[in-house]
Length: 235
Image (cartoon, rainbow, N blue to C red; front, side):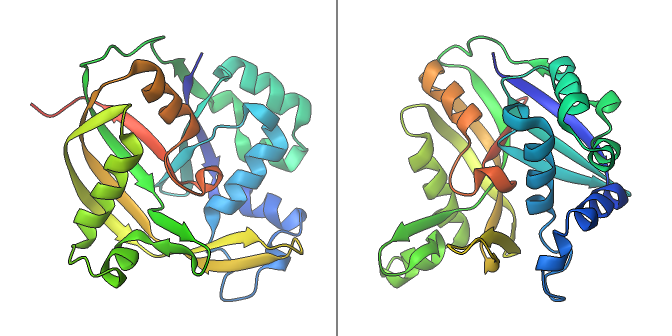
């Protein structure tokens, strides 16, 4: 069963834990503190194991980070897992008593119209250039598309068969540094597009749509991309 969960993580506690783990020591001064999603991924995966929410997205509220994510584990079982696996500093950051969540319906019927918010990394991959912003790739291929047209088209491709876009627009775009480990396991800074897309869709195949929610959309799903938050469709 798929669960939507919410975690509330104090920013100071997250960085205190990361410092104890020497995670910040691996980042140069320019990168320091830039990839919060990498730290969250590491905290949750080490402390919750396969119960960690993935994909997930974040929202900053004052000095706290609100994490929304999908997992196969309910909030009560997540609390038990955190108390079993997490180190003291990690437990302080996770605040398991504040875990919240609920199970999604077993099936979202075909034809259901749903609003959504998505934070994604809209890239395409090829052998020569590796990952490339899909808008840049389209322009280099001679297609005169706006960023919104390129990113919404990219999303429509990934929904194909599972759902159909009714309307969608680009609600935000940035190109943050993201941190990944290279082949030598050293942390490497990269620039990637972070697109926020909002809109309305119609479910076409309930099973494929559910798999899309649980698996995430696009690349870098373990690091704060690919999470689709469902909401009421606009009338």
